[in-house]
Image (cartoon, rainbow, N blue to C red):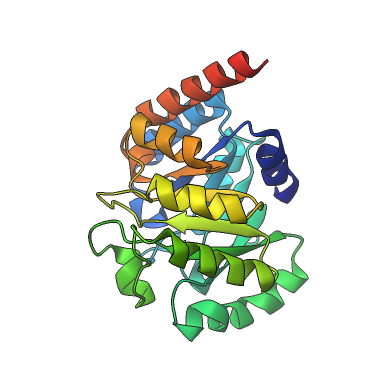
Length: 250
């Protein structure tokens, strides 16, 4: 998966990940239908995780994804150690470098490290940066951190550079699930200019126009959560857009 993310970044072809919150898992039949559509579209990744966990269905969801979409990697994007499952292909080993909560900088990581060491799962060391999306979201509340302002790119750049010098190899800018405003193009552009590592962007990307803006600013991978969970229409639109720009590039 790391190689795939690096290849997407170096080629400039752009990619899509569908972020699935385990707590949104309700109807197996509806979910199977959505997975079949995602498989046809050949999205790049499934991310799996959420801010809280009310039902331990992570392994069940992974098994279902692998049955219907065997060629699409499943990557854990855990909000806490309870969202770990050895069935996943990889894990975003995220350090919330934009906050000052020690548990999310290193605490949870210490708990999970022995399990990862025994597994064959690929570990992707990721600098996670929470950006103000215009309202308090669940990730703000659960992480107990203040997001970076969406209009001061220099703060996000300095934070990303600190993560780079700490050895983090992937970066994730997130406005939070359901945010009214996505990460601003100015911040994406400024961070991408300084950080050549794969850049993932998520939160508030609920329309094709917002996603186009993120790509054009420098996002290598967009992460679609609520927008894809309600309907696969948005995944279809993004997939068609990416196909069109790849055809023009060739």
